Image 1: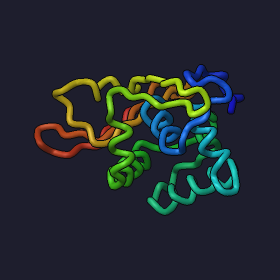
Image 2: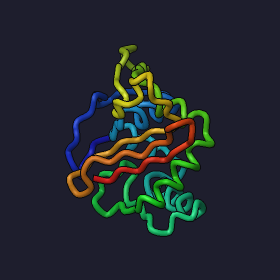
Image 3: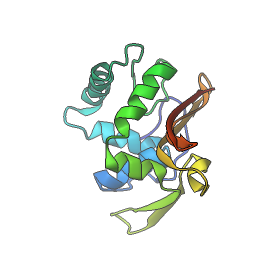
Image 4: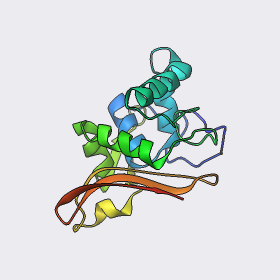
Length: 166
């Protein structure tokens, strides 16, 4: 899988073979676009069905101002609002696997073809700070939107969802 929209870099070489679990892990924690493309391509019905499922989930969550055009967030026609993204973070908080994958400071996945470990760091540096209690985290960047961060954390013993766009 290749990023044909933005030409982003990847730590996964062409031909890497991962379990779906590891593919999801590196896509979420390390913002690995090649992994996100692979998840969409291998979804039942392929990329189009994956994007349709993303949009259906957004509608189910009441994300009225959100529209997905690709599985990575790289397409400039992917749109959302801070309020809609807060709804998504709140829903993601209900999935233990997402909480775990998005808050590990570093990790690795194993290429089943070669046996090599691919190590990575979480793209949210705050997960490496001991004084932060983070429940869900996801970063992103494209020139159109700037640096973005969504996360659930605790501040003064109160749960807070933070959405930073650009």
